[in-house]
Image (cartoon, rainbow, N blue to C red; front, top):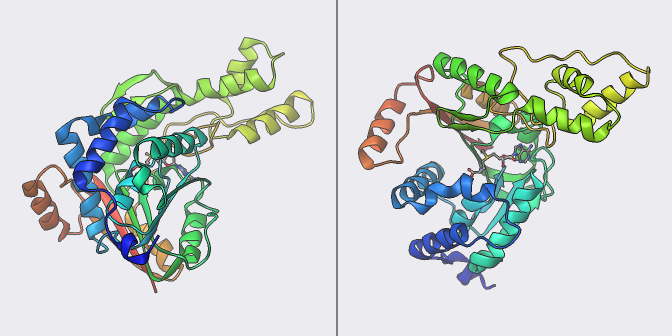
Length: 339
Ligand SMILES: C[S@@+](CC[C@H](N)C(=O)[O-])C[C@H]1O[C@@H](n2cnc3c(N)ncnc32)[C@H](O)[C@@H]1O
């Protein structure tokens, strides 16, 4: 594709909205059913506008996405990657660890966002080991994803490697560990995610609890186990991923290792055992800045109170940001520039 063509936005805002709607109402065969649950808000005009404005406000912190190479780190179903490409990003690496999401993204892209196909590249990977050339990207973007990564230190190492000098890391997350109220609410959420019951908790939909996922894993890996033993072992392997469960329980059952001893305790962040990611870890944004500065970035954090709903809320957010009040903010943004 000619450079001049790449600089143009390949889809108008109206075309993008239509494509997103069609993708949600007529998803191609084989798309994970969670796609609709995850992005259902986009079917409603207000929900759609709020979603787009939130992304525009975030990208405005670094002068937008146009003509840039972006790594979307933990891209989910890839809708944000598609949006950035529609705004004229030169290339977007949509990097995601959860295979069904990556495959769904590819299918949706092919079926409904053909104009973006040359720019958006869904890749199945852990963000701590990006299959992307060194010094080749302009932006690494992490939206509502950093609180799930296995290893944030290694992710930042990768940011330092893949970004060109002058490139940006942009992080947006709602798990503001510097706010004591959020910390307390999150501990309750963690307990529900680990042990259930399923259903709603605030804005969160509690899926199958982690303890019952571990029971399923144990039944599949050790079919001879009695149900009582499955329950007992699932209760003491909290925080383990699948590989560790199989390794340690296998050793224990074969009299080659001690009994696992990791029961869930309030205040522990649970872990999804099949894919291994953390569920809503809390970070103090200032600590993330220090980690980035140690890796050669100039970083700053902003408290975030909302702002995508309308201009008034946005202005209030901009004003409140002048006070570095992470203690009260619901969410945070981190922006770091590679020196
Ligand atoms: C809450 S979703 C956000 C998705 C997307 N950024 C968005 O805003 O729609 C977080 C995503 O990060 C992914 N993720 C978590 N840990 C990851 C890792 N280590 N490497 C790649 N993706 C990861 C999860 O699978 C999940 O899809």
